[in-house]
Length: 620
Ligand code: GLC
Image 1: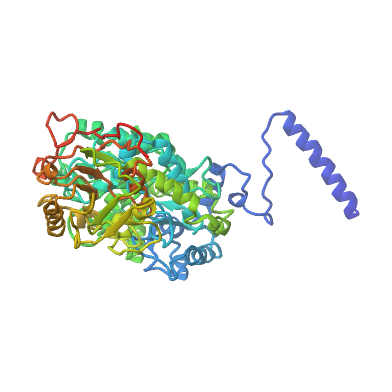
Image 2: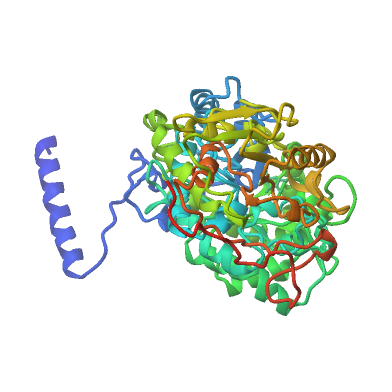
C-alpha cells in the first residue's frame, strides 16, 4: 500500500481508537515511542511519573551516587559526573576564582554540563550556606544575622529577605540554600546563638516564613531556591551551650521547645531538612531513626529529603572517619543524602556494599532517590540546569541593600536612654570610637566570605556604622573617629562606643568562660568615662554580653547584633530617623553565669525577653 494511504489509514484507525478510549474515559498518555524522548524528560508529565520512569532506568550506582554530596574542592566536574554525584556544595568560604556571580555561574554550569552529558543526564543540585544573604559571594547583600531579625519582629520583612537571598543565589547557579537555621538557642554561651531567631520557639516559628521567600511561589521559578530547615533537632539545647554537644532534655521538652519550628517549616513546604550534630540524651541525631523517620518523616509528614551535616555520620560512633556500620545506621535512620564531603568515593563503595549485603534495603535507597529526584524535577533542574544569568543585574543592588538597611533599623534594640538619644543632627560634636565602629567584617560576623568571617574595614562592600553617623551629620556638626578614643575631650557632646565581638562561627564561638567585654573595649570605656563626655554604647555581637558592670556609667545602650553590610541602618536609629521598635528575642543576663536563662523560667535577667525602648517623641 502506498505510504500516503498507509499513513492516512493508520491515522484514521488511531483516531477511531483514541475516540473509543476517550469515550471509555481512559486517560490517554502519549506513548513515548522508542525514538521519542523518555518520559522522565517530558516536562509536561506529572513529576511522580517522571520519577518513576527515571528510577526504572537507574542502576544501583546511579542511585547511590544521587545520595552522595561532595565538596567542590574535592570533585572536579568530570570526577563528579564519573561518580554520578547527586550534589555538590560549597562549604563556608569555598569559593571559585573570581569570587563573583559570573565566577560562580561558570563553576556550577561546568558541573551541570558534565552531569547532564553523561549517563541518564541527571543534573546535580548545588548547595551553599545562604544564612544571611548569599554570604559566600563578594558583593552580595549581607543581611542581619537571625538574632537581629528575631528582635525586629517582622516576619513579612524576613520573607522579603528570603526572596532577595534566593534571587542573588539563583543568579550564581546556587539552587539550594542551607538556611534557615531554626535552632532555639537556650544557652547564649553557644557559638551559634546568632543563627537563632530567639530563645523560645515562637521566634523561629514566625520567622520560618523566610522559607516562603526562599522557595517562592513555585520551586521552578527562576529566582527560587530550595530551602533547608536546620539543624534537626535540639542543636540549641545542648548542656552548657556546647556546640555539637549533648542535649539532655525529655522528649516532652524537645517537642515543646525545639520541634515547633520544624513543624512550621514543613507546613511552608520546605524542600530539605539538615540533621544536627548534637546528641539527644547521648545518642547522635545522625543515627537516630526515631527522630528522623518516626518523628520528622512520619509524624510531621516531611516529604522532602534529609541531608546530613558536614561529616556528620562520622560522629555516630565517636571515632574519626565513617565506617560501614555508621553508613548503615545513618541511611537506615532515614538520611537521604550524605554531605560526605571529601571521601565520597569511599562512601559510595561502602553504601553500595551495604545494599548488596542486605544491611540496607533497596526500598530505603529508592525512598531516598524518590525524595531527591522529586525536588530536582520540582526545581526545574532537568529543563533549566544552567544559571539564569539575567538575574545577575540585581546582585547586591541598591534596592536589595535598602531592604537590608530597613532590617538593620528594625533589629536595633534600645536598652537604655538617659535622654542622650536620639543624637542631634545639627551643631553637634560627636566622638565615635571602638573596634566595631568602622569594620564591615566585624559587623557582618561569621559566615561572611569565609566560614569564620573576618575583621576588616572594607572586606565586603557596604556601609559601616561610622559611615552612617558621618552621612547623617547635619550642618555645623563635627564627627571624630578614633578606635581607641584618642583625642576625646570635654568639648564633645557625646561619645559613641561601638564595642562587642569579632567574627566566629559554630564551635569556635563557644564561650563557656563568660561573655564579658574584651580588654580593648573595657579600656576604651574607661577612657571615655574619664573624659566626662556622655557615652552611648553600641554592642555589635552575636548574643547578649556581660555589660551590667558598665551600665551605670553609660547614658545610652543599643544592641545592634550583627547588622551585616548596611551598618548605616544603626545610625538611622541613633539619629532618630527611625524610632527604635526592636525587642529582645533573648533574655539579657545580669551575667553569663546566669546562663541558661530564658523567658518563662522565672529568673530575673538584666533585661527581660521582649524588652526594648523607643524615643518618647519623634525627634528630627
Ligand atoms: C556546617 C554547619 C551547617 C552547614 C554545613 C555546610 O558544619 O553545621 O550549618 O550548612 O556545615 O557548610
